[in-house]
Length: 442
Image 1 (cartoon, one colour):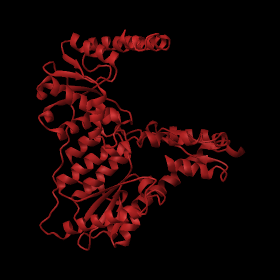
Image 2 (image 1 turned 90 degrees about the vertical axis):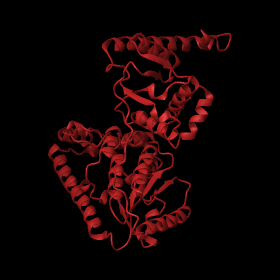
Image 3 (image 1 turned 60 degrees about the vertical axis):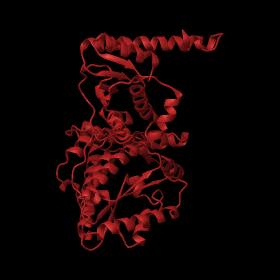
Image 4 (image 1 turned 180 degrees about the vertical axis):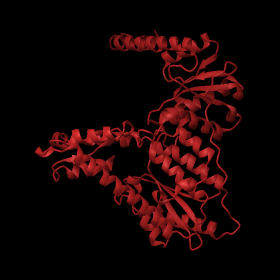
């Protein structure tokens, strides 16, 4: 986002118009699975086009909805470009330019794979594959000279798009992960990582932005995949304050580790599939349902609604100490995830509940936001915590409880509505209260 602002600002007085299409996902109309771009990428054209009034008038920011089909995309492009600079543009011109561009794109991608095939030799020497988002890894302004550091050490360095990932055998663990992982670039990264686990002489270097929330989820599963395969790897988190000097020592140490693994004839990477702990999708009445306390009013109503329909349900406690404890497991994820996970752990331990009988209610979503990964990642936190909590389950359901029953959904609607009305009433009264805190107490 910082770089995008800088590029647009630099172009402000150099270009008549700046073309920045907004793209939500990488998917054709006939593809059911969503591969969304992360929320920063999705919003960057809209945000940067508002840097100045002058730029706002000259920025061309069409929303390209590829899932609606090519005709829709071409018409959107035509509508945004027709009349710009006083020039009429025909849809046929747009179509012709589109075919030319997509064919060149296809050829370039084929050339990348050919480069890998002609340059990688597993028996000649070890090689490195750089994993990460293309705008991070391939930008000379953002990658802090990391590719050149490897080149200076005589190590052949490839990028993830060069790998023939489609040649990999099916992997149930990876397929399970990709079903819940909403992000396009993250999916490509994990597929490339899977290819590397089975390729002798190929070692991964994951380059990510410091505290990139989507990547913080990916790192956990990337490490798990490499650990199962017994293959060394390097993770580099970079930010705007770093110089390439700080990475040279880490790169050199990683290359020594890679070489030790490469030269050890007995050290063969394991191609076993790694297991993914999936959430539960059926809520049974023999489980103790623990409900997250993300809103004290709505949470109490929703928990009471589940009790009304025969589920033993408790609302989790929430405290400032819980937030502080949650930081122990946070490596860049949005903090509510870690807070909910630790509230869940604390409640089970404090009440002496049997973890194998408990299940945490979480919401299912199709947004590009991290919330989609909450159920699965909380299960990972429980696994890492141990002490019997690995037996605790996480449920992933609709926020309106539509998958449980019509009756539960009906009263959930009233729960949300009534809690909203109470919240609004409190907000109206609170500025005029004489005794601070009295509104909340009532």
